[in-house]
Image (cartoon, rainbow, N blue to C red; front, side, top):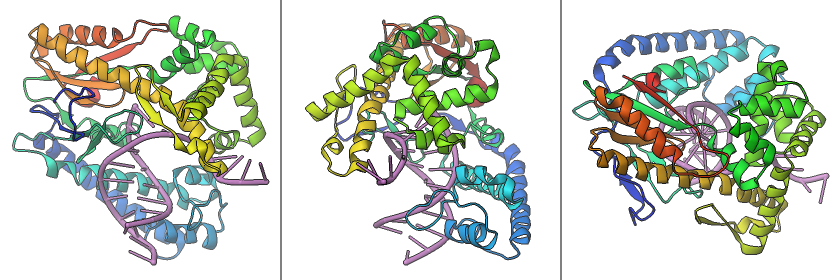
Amino acid sequence: MATCTRSASSRGVLTSGRRPPSFRAGRWGVNGRWTAAGDEEIAACEGEIYALANEEFVIGSPQQLGEILFEKLGLSRKRRGKTGYSTDARVLQAIRSEHEIVPKIERWRELSTLIKTYLDVLPELTDERSRIHTTFLQAVAQTGRLSSTNPNMQNVPIRTPLGREIRGCFEAEPGSILVSADYSQIELRVLAYVADEPVLKEIFKRGEDVHTATASQVFAVAAEGIDPVMRSKAKMINYGIVYGLSDYGLADRLNIPREEAKEFIDAYLERFPRVASFMTETVEQAKLNGHVTTLWGRRRQIPELQARNYQVRTLGERLAVNTVIQGTAADIIKLAMVRCRRALSESESRTRLILTIHDELLFEGPPDEAAPAAELIEREMVGVWEREPPLAVDVGVGQNWLEAK
DNA sequence: TCTGTCACG
DNA sequence: ACGTACGTGACAGAC
């Protein structure tokens, strides 16, 4: 992979270098059986869905699916888009218990997405060494992040059990090993710093689990009393704050009444008051200047703030706050890439940076170098930032990308 | 070509 | 009262 500094490419395009992660045909043979199983399960799903709907239709058409669910079967209509009622994953989740067809559709969606987008495509993109080469775009994402295309290596599945199988298909070259290093909750740490919020900073300085600690603050319950449901609500609130969520948005995502969502947000802002003032001050400044800047001076113009249209203007307000946080995190990982490459080179390491995914760096190198390389990488990533709260990095080593994570 | 959906962070 | 979470890229269906 070529190094990615801000001046690296005037055309804004970088291709990954000689050693991208491989997607091995051998391994694929094993998974060939799995894909066959996937195809069979999809076919079975289809049959069951048609039987429950009492007709055949194109399941992949949101229009036709909407007619079946909301007109023929009379299920609850949630959000609507430009052309009709939404049938997206959140809607299906909310109406899952209303009809047994819904879980079948959810399963069909999961299988068909993973097979069509990844399993059918990636093996076709391997080179003669079974390796895959992505292209990084440096001048697309408005926040300063890199993006990845053809194929997009920054959205390889991991969240579901099936998705994890796909992640595991990316293997180190024979005789090499992968080292994955990711920043832990980098955006929330950046928020704690830029907002100078003492309670949030303290959570990170103590090394506590930030979502559990937030749940404890918001719900006024001791950390020991926080169950997984409360923690996941707090996680939603934590990230929602970074993105500028509304009570309506939180209510929709947590499937709770709007009043309750409003109470959660109010409780959060009361417990972390400097986050509230950071948001209003950032928006105020952005309205005056017409732009925001990240900690390292990356600038984003936000013309939306001048719009007369309310919807566009409030979008501008969310962009202002989010760009400072996401953009600063992008600055940090770019600096980390430069530092890691330089330090590996100076120590005459044979370990190479092969992929960057917003808060994660992936390296490949000789197995006997993995331990010292992991130590070096962690040191360089943490060392980008000498502020409070500190950054934290999780490092893993493995033969494939799933094991390394 | 647009829209909806969904994969990741 | 408004409309309702940020940033991407890929795929399928509708027009």
